[in-house]
Structure formats: C-alpha cells, structure tokens
Image (cartoon, rainbow, N blue to C red):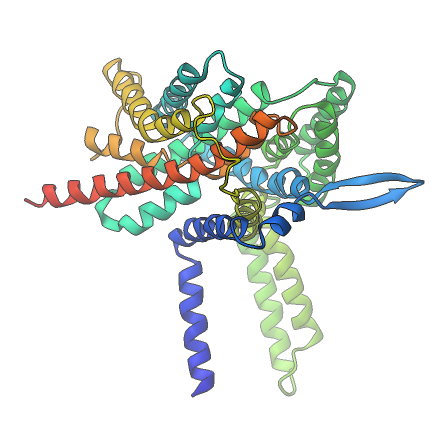
Length: 443
C-alpha cells in the first residue's frame, strides 16, 4: 500500500512539474519567500549571505566573486544561453522565421518596449533614476506561459503563439538594450579577444564540427573576455548560442539505415544468448545506438533541451530568491523620483498600449497581419499579459542603478518591489480580461 501511495505521489509530482504553469508558479513562490525571509528575523543573515565571497587565492591574490555575482553573472549566463538558443530556433524554424511571420511579433515587441520606456523616461527625465528606463521593457516568458496555461482554452492557440513569439522577440530586444545602454567602460583589448573567440566559434561551425564540448569550452573563455571588456558577461552566452550548429551530424535516412543494422546485430546476438544477461554484441549495439541517437539530433535543440529544465527549475528560482528579497522599512522611499510610477505604469499601461498600437499600425500599413482567429481584443489582452516583467526586469534593475550610492540602493529596492507588484497586477488584469472576454463571447 505504501509503495502504491509513493508511486501515485511521484506520478502527481511529475505531472505538476511538467505543466507549463509550474515554472512560473515556482518563480513566484521563490520571490514571495525571498520577501518573507528578508522581512523576518533572518533578514540580516539573508542580506549578508549574498555578499559572501566565494573563490580561491593565488599568491595572495583573490580570484572569485560574491555569491550574488556568481548567481547574477555566472548562473544567469546559462539562462541567457537558453534564451539565445530559443531565439535562434524561433528565427530559423519557428514563428520568427521569414519576414512575414516575424514581422508582427517583432513589431509588437518593439511597441512593448518603446511604450514602457517612454513612460518611465518621461516621468524620470532629469533625475538620477532615469537610467532605469530599460526596467519595464521586458516580458517574463515563464510567468506569461504560466498564466496562459492557467487560462487554458479561454485563450486561443493563435494568441498563445503570438504572445510566446512576442516574448522571444522581446528577450532579443532586452539583450540589445543591455549591451547598448548597460555596459561600462569598454576595454578594446578584451573586446578584441572576445571577437577572436567568436570568429573561432564561427569557423568551427563552418568546418562542420557538431560536438558541443568545443563550443562550451570556448564559451567559458568568451564569458571571461566579455566579463573583462565591460559588456555584461551574460551577453557572451547569447553570442555563444548564436554559433551553436543547427544541422545534425547525420541525416534521418542515414540514421534509419544504421538503426536497421544495429537492430539486426542485436537480434543475431539474441539467438546466442544464454540466460537473462545481454551478450557483448548486444551491449555494443546499444552503445552504437546511443552514439547514433546523438548524431541524428539537432545540436542546438539537444543543448536547449538539456539546459532548459535547469534554467526553469533551478537557475531562475535561485535568481528570484537571491534578488527579490527586499527589507521593507524606513529605508524604502516610494517617492524617490518616479521609479515606482515609471515601472508600474510602464508594465501595466505602457505594455498593452505599445503592443496594441504598433500591431494596429503595422496591419493598417500592410506590413504585417494578425494571426488567424485573433481579434484586436485578443491582441490587447496579450499585451496586458506582456506586462509581466519579473526576471528580465529584475536583471536590468541590477545593472541600471549604482548600488554603491545611497540613491542607487533605495532606487534598486523600490524597483524590485514595484516589479513584483506590477507583474502580479499585469497577470491578474490580463487573466480577468480573458475570463470576461470568454464569458461575453459565449452569450
């Protein structure tokens, strides 16, 4: 009975973790837990934990970073690698492949970045907080997918595809914003080293190298070069993703021929088998099958599928727990410039208006067309859900303000609280919009 209960529990747990909404729910839980811990008696220990240095000394010279930087610069590099792989996949095979298919989500994403950016900038121009204009520009794809999964059939497939492809295009936009506006004192020497490594990666691809190990090893050196050149190190992960080869080592027809040969050898050895143990020839056949299985797979998809679970269920939750915890006390000044209003209005108002306006104009000019079956109400609702910023917004917050200054510290804390409030508000409003729209459409 106990074994059956355990098996049933594991089956339920597996079903929950494989659902589209789980990553978003886990992310939200980690953010809320961080806020609870930061405002509990453990708050001081929580704050000090992320400042703890991890590394090693060589001849008295310390090589390493604080735990906060290990998470935000190193762990998040894997998150950005997955984002880069998703963007490349969508551009080559998905909803961003070809001008006609890519035009609408890219234009919508552009509107969804410009709208919030203008609102934030207009409210904070002339203040020290104006550097935060990039914070409300991003859409959190994990959260958005989670809300879509909860809404279920109330949102049509065409709208889901539109929002997901918009979020992917939005990620590319956020990466460009980080590279252009949140880089400091670029070192030309290290930039040249980074460019040289990228050239080597491209050459590997041209030579037909399909094994992922050389790319990943060079990716480590690319991260070091970019980290030292002044551009944020996570950009290195995106550049690496763009160089990962797409074509498999062998085509499917060759794989099928080899599969037939392997199965034939396996069957021949079966006739000689004595007992339950596999023959040496059968073990060897299984080994060959494993090799050929990897050879026929697209290297880009293989790497994305290998890393995505770690990114969604480990890296992003750790990032959320490490960065979302803000101690709410006398140090929090919501009236500092217009950081609170800029982010809140940017995500909740600027996103849907920007996405809707740019999409509407693009269709009227004949540049792009709405997905089949998607009404203008659907586009506005998708824009409302696009206001769920969270992960990328918090990431940009860490780059936007100088945490070594009193103003920067307060602005960062206010921004993080506002991102959480605005993302929840956008998610709730977007959900209510689709629920009401679904009920009205049935009357």
